[in-house]
Length: 158
Image (cartoon, rainbow, N blue to C red; front, side):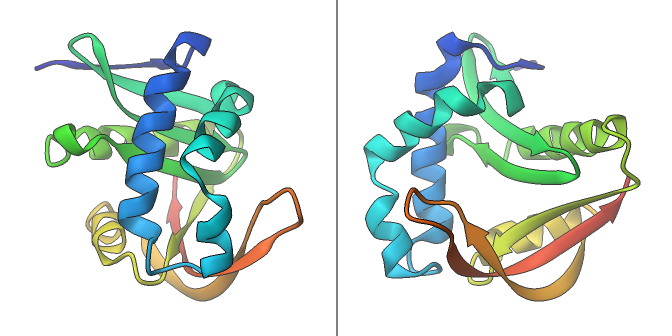
């Protein structure tokens, strides 16, 4: 099945929120503070997506949104693929697009944060040529201020 990338549209919000919610649970439950899990409710993903459409590129397989990436400046903030499309190569296509966008934004190095316990994601980034720059606390945004999340900072020259 062919995959195309395009800028997200408002009509993609439900698909992006569903993929984000499901994927976030897979990679973060048990790996982030309970305080963050408590506020990352299903509804919170649908609330957050409309304000992030401008930062989002979607991968479309056939006629459905199969994954997405969000890039802001030099940071690759989110990379998610739906459960049905994992292992299809879409994640590699999305991370390559994110790297392209960071370079187009005028940066020579891209970075992203991965929850320390998210071994599957960490292996993917390492296979994709990203370097583990070490542990740090990522300030996850919430309405009540940031919550520090134990992460690893990955970087790649673009």
